[in-house]
Length: 454
Image (cartoon, rainbow, N blue to C red; front, side, top):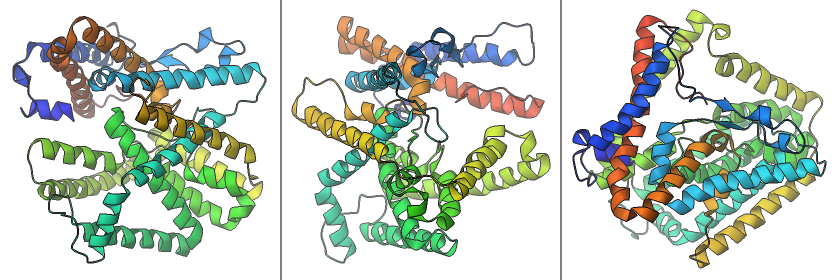
C-alpha cells in the first residue's frame, strides 16, 4: 500500500518520490540485477546473479537435520522492501515461527516420527495441522472481537435504522443479502453437480472462514500471497474419512478445492481491501473506488479468459507451463481423486490432536499478545508458520528485520524515515523489471525467463 501512496504523492516524504535519490538507488540495485539476468537470455556469455534459488539442501542430508528440507535462500528485493515497512515485532515473528516449526521437524525426525508432507505442498503434515488449528481459532476470535459491528450490519440488513454505512464500499443490506444469495447459489451448484448440498455448504463455509484469515495475513503481514497447506477438504477427510463424506461426493468436492482453494496465489479480497485503504488515504470515496475496481475486475476476467483459451487451444497444455496445465490437473486432481474414490482415506484422529495443539497455542499467543506489551511474538507469525510463502520469504524477511533493527537502534526514527524511499525503490525496481521483461520477451519470443519463480 505504501508504494502507490508514495508514487502518487499522498504519503509524506521529505522529497517527492520520483525525485528522491534514495528511491532511485534502491530501484537501480533491483533493476540492474534483473537486467543482467535478463540479458543473459539474449547474450549467453554474460554473467548472472543467482537471486532466484540458492539451495542449502546439500548441507542437510543426515538425520535429523534432513527434516528441514526444502531449505533454500531467495533474494527477493521486493520482499525486503515490504518487510522493512512491517513492525519489528511482526517481521521477527514471521521468521522466528518459521524456524520454530523447523526445530519441531528436527526433533520429530530425531525421535523417529514419520514425516509426511501434506497433499500438494512440501509442508510436513503435523506442522500444517497445527497451523490450521491456529487459523480456526484466530478466525473465530476475530469474529468475536468484532461481534458488535456484525450485529449492527445484520440489524441494518433486516431493516432497522442502525449504523451508518454511507462511508462503506457497499451498503450493509446489499452486502448481507448478496452474501446470502451467493452462498446459496454455490451450495445449489454443488448439490446439482453431485457434491451434496450439505458438504458443499460445509466446505465453502470453512473456506471463507479461513480465507478471511488469509486476507488479514496479506494485508497486515506484508506477504505477496498466503497459502494454507492444510485446506478445508483435508480437514473434512481427517475428521470423517472418505466413507464418512461419501465417495460419490468426493470428485466434485475435490474439484472445488483444486479450482478455488489450492495454490491460490491471487485472490481478489486482499487486493480490494488494500485498494480501499489506498482510497481512504487518498480521500477517494469508497463507493467510487469500488465501482472502479469492479470494472477493472470485469475487464481482467474477459481478457484473461480469452487469453487462456487461445493459449490452450493454440499451443496445447503439454507445451505450456507444466504445473498449471498438466501436473496440476493430472497428478494433483486426477491421481488424488482416483485414490480417494477407490482406496479411500480413513479418518485421522492424530491430525485432530495436532490441530488441537495448534488451537491451544494460538489461544496462548492471543492471550499473551493482548495482555503483555513485552511479549515479542505476534500471532500472525504462527499462522504463516512453515507455509510455502515462508519457505521462500524467510531470508528476505530476516534480512529486512535485521536492517530495520540496526537502523532503529543506531539511527532512530529519523534514519528509518530517511531510508523509506530506498526500500520503496527496491519494491518498485523489482516489479518494474518483471513487467519490463514480460513485454520484451513477448515481442522477442524468449521463454523460460522468470523473476518471481515461486
